[in-house]
Amino acid sequence: MDPIFLAEAALNGVLLAGVLALLALGLNLIFGVLDIIWIAYVDLVTVGMYAVYFLVTDYGWPLWAAGLAAVGLGGLLGIAVHLLIISPLLTSPPVNQLLATGGLLFFLQSFMTLLWTTDHRSLRLSLPIIQAGGMFVPFTRLLSFGVAVLAVLGLYLFLTRTYMGTAIRAVSQDREAMRLMGADPQRVYLITSAVGGAMAGVAAALLIIQYPVHPYFGAAFGPLTFMICVLGGLGNMVGAFVASFILSEIISFGGVLLSTEMGYVLAFVLFIALMFARPGGILARRA
Amino acid sequence: MTRPRALAALLMVLIAALPLVPMGGMRQYALHVLVQIFIWSFIAGAWSLMGRFRLVSLGHGAFLGIGAYTSTLLWNVFGLTPWAGGLAAVAGAVAVAAVVGYPCYRLRVVGHYFVLVTLAVGEVVRLLIIAERGWTGGSLGLTLRPAPAQASLLAAQFADKRIFYYASVLVWLGGLAIWRRVDRSMARSAMEAIGEDETAAASVGIDVTRFKLGITALSAALTAGGGVLYAQYITYVSPETLSGIGVSLRIVFAAVLGGMYSLLGPTVGTALTIALSEYLRVTFGIRLIGMAETIYGLALILLIIFLPVGLYGGLEQVMRRAGAVRPGRRMTFLQTRKG
Image 1 (cartoon, rainbow over the protein chains, first blue to last red):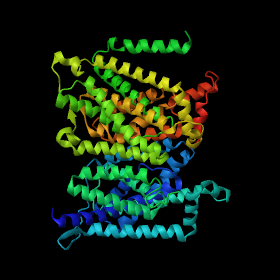
Image 2: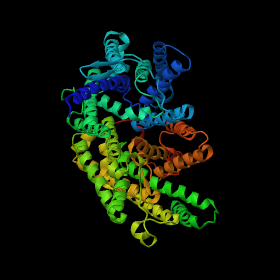
Image 3: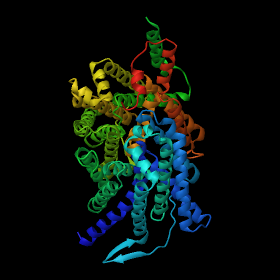
Image 4: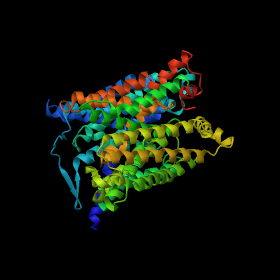
């Protein structure tokens, strides 16, 4: 096989990693703090993608403004999901929490089908394709990769340098102790959900410029996103980044050498194997 | 005869006599819905064997898919009768359950981690079916090769829906019997102890890995069996209807909605979800695509929030409060979170 194909596969893997890391970012935050899997997280991203799409095509907003609107909308959705679905279930068995967000998944996917049918909608931006050494790299992917890195940095600074960020990390470490200190975890949960939702908005704005949106977009990326969160170690942003690199390189190479589905199969199998080998995440020290 | 027994006997007579009731043109449809309810109740019951001990699996679609595709492919390609193919399917599902389950339990993959490993297993099976499109038909699915009329029994294909109706009732009853047996066995006490605190259970001499593996193998075997029956009845298999997250979630919904800690819980949950989705499908049909599922999703969220112990479980609780049922310890186990 032509080495240029392999180089291109490697590069595509890196760029896909940016997308996945971005998707995993907000989910990882919520996962780490609330200890609840939002099965419908990527479907919230899909809602954000539709928002950007319609704001740009139907209302003629510039892309950056629509993107900001998606971030705001994501934050509001995060708050709504938390208040309406998660907070009544905070003390329920985990399976009920899982199922309630699973119900949200069914609801969002079919409600979007009802409103906008299953048509694939794309912004059809004519952004340049960069050519380097015989490889073609779409500018949109490069852009989203860059923003993903920036978003990770921003979230990292927020979590380590602000008072609220410190509180969020405190809750994720020990929920009970936080309550004993007289702090109110409810407020922390709400802000975490809002920030997580806003990250979904960021992801939506960057995904809509490279993928067409349809109601079942979440089904393609959802499982992969959960796995990256776990593989990286819950709440571990750097770990999530590393995990998304590993998985997306496998998907990319597997896709070129075997077939698209086999790439995903290999990634999932590796995920299962790594869960056995390193249950605390790939970067965790063994206890 | 005690009252619950009399009630159960009456119910059985009703179920047995139902196909004989003249319903005109409605008969085929009514039987079709009922067959689905019995098959999926059986599958939801198989899931709840694991679920009730806090082994939450989102990968039962894998066992379902393995079951349905194994028997269908063996029949289509080699002409092997589904009676034997079904056994091969069950063996295949148990093998997969053991290969994934053993390291999971040995290395203590629990909680969310377990959920995600099972989710990955379900996705692997779905994607493998799609990837091997040369002989599995890929996303388009696969139709069961029709058998000539005289080989009907050998091929387990019957034109008459009533045969499938009685077959599914029998299978469902078998599932209930197994559920009851597990419920009354020593294994249940051991499994509940493991669900509460694995370390403590191991310290009193319970072989944690063996018990977990046993219940997983049983659950996988029954689920695969349900998949074989479903494939024989529908005569069409596709990765989306038999594997992947969607179908796995539906099984879990049914079990939890009805109440996975009671014998009839999964059945009640399945009957309700299937009746609801059938009703919505008939009401909205193709006029408003997505409407039925939208209401379905919304109803599920509301039911989970307002009836967390499940419909049947909630009913049991009410009856218990009224003093009609002796107090059990199952409920207290249910209300504590994570242990």
